[in-house]
Length: 259
Image (cartoon, rainbow, N blue to C red; front, top):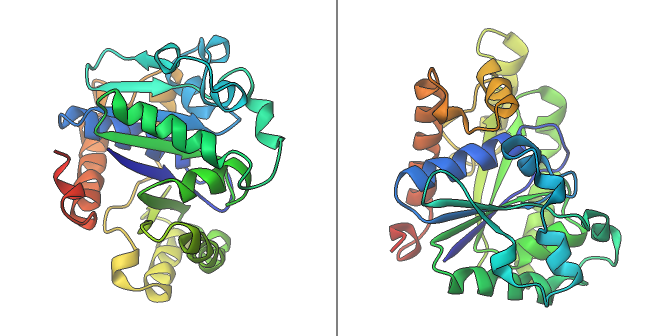
């Protein structure tokens, strides 16, 4: 199984939108995918199921690893797509610093792999500390959504420095790169921010695929669906299919084969 963390320096960059729709894109391609909501705000669960706050989830498991994993995994209408909510104990995230949850995160991931998943995509809380740091330290790869606006772009080097430090603890970690989100091609500042990021980083560190700012994402979240399920969502789905193909190409064999 491949574990990919979706992480950002700050909130509000479209991280959860990327995680949900990328997981759906992999699942549509036949990859047995588990989307884990490791953000205490529970954004994945709130976007996909209104009962998410009532579900036992990831933070409940960190608090009590005796909970059976099968209680956490929620199937969806797509056979290859399941999710784990953040859970009712999401305030437990504040308990202990980085490293405090490492053993339990790794036990969780081993248990998920034993249940036959090909991919575990983990939506993390913003920042690189606490549980998020432990998730990244336990993952095979990390991708970084970043809003196409000038202030956010300037924070990217600091985030990459932090990931370099985490790679000391996890040498197998692949930094897949930065994915520009909320891109508005008609807005000069958005286009300039995207160009600035491409000048700032090596070409291989910036995904070619960009996620546009689109009201479809709001409508999909309101209906509890990935955007590709909407009647007029084919164009947005094609964006995430392209992002999926880029990620597969970046993952070295045999990981890229997904079995």
